[in-house]
Image (tube, rainbow, N blue to C red; front, side, top):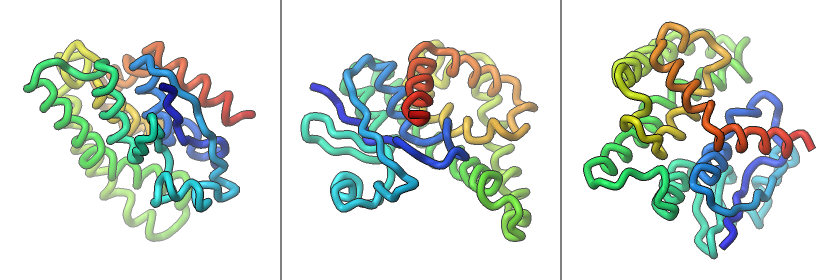
Length: 215
């Protein structure tokens, strides 16, 4: 059954390459699942059309329709795809628990200050409140990156040698600050990001994503 992915068809150039539909598209490529993209024009307000709000009442992307099962929230979708395909998911119970731990760490701990830094830098850089707020966010991001630096000191991916679904979530979160120098002092994190972004599934995903948004 073909999976329909609701993603961006048009979006402000400032966020191209870091939108959250990329997480789902990457997971689909890794899992080798058949899918099609329903592109939505964010600039024209299509995310708030009544028909789409039936898919995601929050008016956000991504969302998927898999044989009538509607899911939104990128973390939930990526986890679901890993479970459905048997790929990106470790086999042992303990390893699955660790994968879930790192997925929540990516979404709930690492990502929030990073996203706020990206929002400030891309949209609010000259605002007084942003100038006052950013240093504390940078400090929080540094503390989290230091934890990751240690965790990745002797491993290729978050769970060892196997690339799993939390790696997609973590890489996507970290990619939001690649326009800064925040990762420069964390070589293990930088190497990890490069390793993840060298994966053929990511390269296919990002290439098609750019072609779609450029159309």
